[in-house]
Length: 335
Image 1: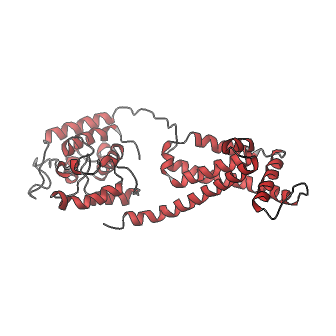
Image 2: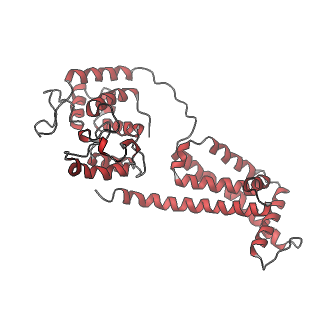
Image 3: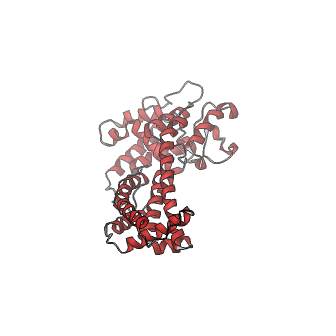
């Protein structure tokens, strides 16, 4: 979600006040007290599912929801246009972002740049929000349908347009991003993970081969798990005595990037799977002493467990990636 600029927020505050008394949990007819849980705690899919039931359940004309009274058809169109996720929470910030997108649909960008007049933009707003007046008549654009009516005066809207235009002339505060958004982090992870594997895999493969062929390593073929632990221990010992500058640097780079990651990354299962995989791999291969302390078991057992977790992270990531392709079909399947 992008930050809503101040001029747009001024307009959204008026729209929210007129449409829903400023309440993000409002539904059509102010029936929100009848819901099982507040709108702001629902996911987008839950809202869409609920909206289908309100007209018959509550005897209301539509499924308008939230501070900006977004009807189901409009929310579905936003879901397609913005590639919304089914589990996106219908929070106040999320609703503000959707409201801003509706302003942009109605010509906000052209209006703020002076390419269309206040009168034209007011008319556009009346087409999106039925409680806003048509500038020529003062009545709702949908006046006469027996449902909608204008609830705010032309003068009030005109004053807010003037206020928003004035705010647009104020210098925007410089915002320095401290943490990368989840999608940017995920893209970064997708680049760093192959680099890390590319640097570590040949080395690990070489050391495993050497360990298997090393007569000093007692390998009991009758006990595969013991043999695997013995090989892992020899691989780690061998790596510790080898110049592996690139691997620790890569691992430290990844760890540094992850430490700056926003908590929002945990909303991205693909990125989360990759982070799990990389950290366990780096911990198991590069820092065996930390691996032992982390797992709290013998060193060789700790190594095998962490490498297994690393593989599990990749499986998680793969499943999440497949789901992300199928989810929009399920999310938008029933209109």
